[in-house]
Image 1 (tube, rainbow, N blue to C red):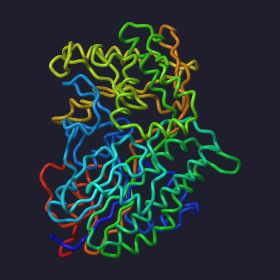
Image 2 (cartoon, helix red, strand yellow; image 1 turned 60 degrees about the vertical axis):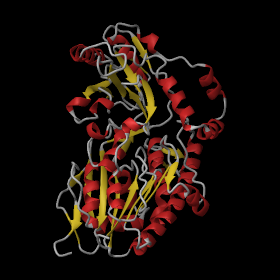
Image 3 (tube, rainbow, N blue to C red; image 1 turned 135 degrees about the vertical axis):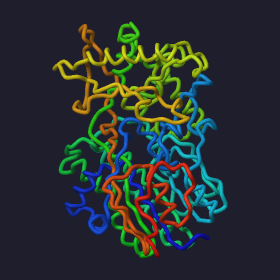
Image 4 (tube, one colour; image 1 turned 90 degrees about the vertical axis):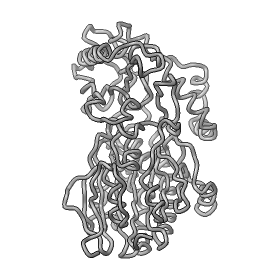
Length: 499
């Protein structure tokens, strides 16, 4: 055993910091507000509003996406010329709590998405008890997920099927998410109160779904705003928070954090597929996907029925269907540049010779193609003349490492000033239409927060800003375990001298 310090990390997944601070200041969340006032505060920054699916693998690995290579639940594997789930061996990496468990630190990690299981005697980990992310439900030890369900209940949060929700349905969703928060808070309290468990991460995925569906500032139902519902989702955690802190004790470092946030915008990435068609010399109308038989059947049944059925399909079946949908008009692996799975911003991959199984173009030809996409996008305007796209974001300019080739080569980034785009026009006046019906109204930002109550003998770094890579070395520093080489981040907390 390496020491007695303990660390509890409480993640409010994708919780928008401005929403939390406004509801806390308004008196809706008094216990969380007191914790925020009395704790050290950091801003969390990162490029997660673009490659947002990489945020939790970056947290778990302590390195940038170019080194761990994960950015989505379904990824294109160039050498095999097909989509694979993130659990594919080619995308495996080692979460930082493996080293802690190997050092004898008993650890429990709950619902951190897109990361591998750590199978060590001192480790407990559950994936998919209650998450909106498309994950394969599993746990270590194998019976842990079953035991959590037996003690705390079957969680109401399931895989998000992107429903169109009325105001009443959004209010009902918030009630269900609050019920899930209450269940998770009870688990958190139990973990915080176990002195033998020196490290724990509990992720509240309920705030992630709330952000996607409650981002628009509006009265959702008469007398109830979107932020009233966000506060309703968080209230069970606020009520439990004093008990969580008491259970943890003064010797435990407790951090409440989010790695990214949310802003109001409706997905118009389907317009990007039409921009890609323009760059390849095709008519944009040819890139508008047409509903196949399964999609027409899905649209004909109530969302709750579809959600029930989708959540119970085998993971491999869900993955195969999503790959089919994403590849309908993009000719994945065949065109010189093609779309790969991603949401919000159009993700592009070059069909490079030597990298892709059926690669056909050189890097120079690929850059010329991206320049054509960029030029086509620059000419796309709304009917009022507003630019639809902000930039073509080239991944190689931001991330590097041995797995950078696993990532999209570029993202076509929409203008954040445009909340929704139903139609647009290219420089030649050709009409582009958005076939996406509004479902979610919130998209990710790259800003988060971290409030820390240091335990006895733990000191804090004087920085104002941290990023997702800093949590891994911080865990080692707080727990007094020598950190392995390779982390890119820097501890923001650790054992004080003589502590």
